[in-house]
Length: 297
Image 1 (cartoon, rainbow, N blue to C red):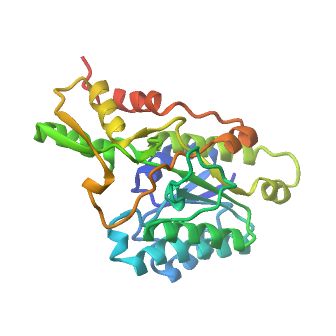
Image 2 (image 1 turned 30 degrees about the vertical axis):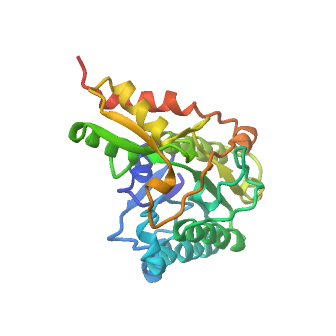
């Protein structure tokens, strides 16, 4: 039985992973009290004590705007910690699964980004996540880095929950309409991760060499794309609640500390080709998520 170490059990994706990964082996789930990614010693001691076959790092510094004023902490968690995890994984011949972001791109491309496009992050958050990717790749360890985008779900701090709350509090909402991305359900990310790991664990040839062939960066998001305004409109339409007036505004009308890419839609073609996974269109996934939120008759 494979031993899986899951880091970040309280996050949106980590909470879902605790359920989707459970059938794959002995899963050991830790939170920040056990593994603080800002403290290298806690990373090293935990990995060496548990000796997992697979490490899934679902923890990160995700406060995009706050990172502009806390660059050192963002760097420790998003840049340095993944490199340490990769080095420790290499010591014990473990596979490392890590999550990254669409914000490694600058958004100037008119078409969806592929894994071959050159990153150029605009924010501290995006820059630290890119350095984390590079640290893992430099460690020469079996790894799968999954870039995702606009993550939402039924728990945690995310755009979906914010819109549902504000819809009850205000008659009008001003929402940015000139940033385009792919809203991606946290459960879908977790389920896809479990399918990827399931395929890796069923490989017949030499395990390490086979995993090395699959190592790399993969884009994992819902298909299609929309603006934040379009995302908000769909949330309220699906929920069939009294809808406040949604006013589309430009990024310049809603300035924030961190710069965002105008287009951060990611292409999943590599994921489909290598693992055969075809993720649902973003609105279909949103409807599935909101089915659990809508009061039952």
